[in-house]
Image (cartoon, helix red, strand yellow):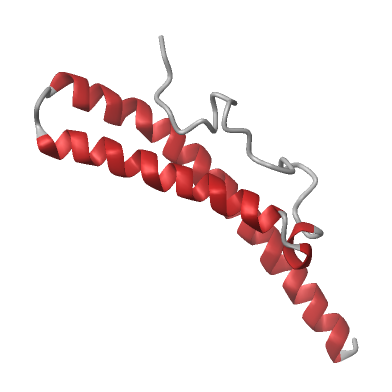
Length: 102
């Protein structure tokens, strides 16, 4: 296999792994917000739980924005897996970076 083809193959694998990891991390952050919101509600006025919740919201939003930014990069977007969304929707309850309402 020519060196250039090997490099493109390695780049493709790295980009696919990157999108898979980032998307699944975003889903995990969004799910963790449910527990963080319960903790904050159970400990009103406790700075630790409020800070934890706020920090989790911020890293969730950062992950969503990173995914969307990378999805627009020509060098990476073409290798995103077909099972992954083109862009992350901030309204979708699984990726909105808000606790689930019950």
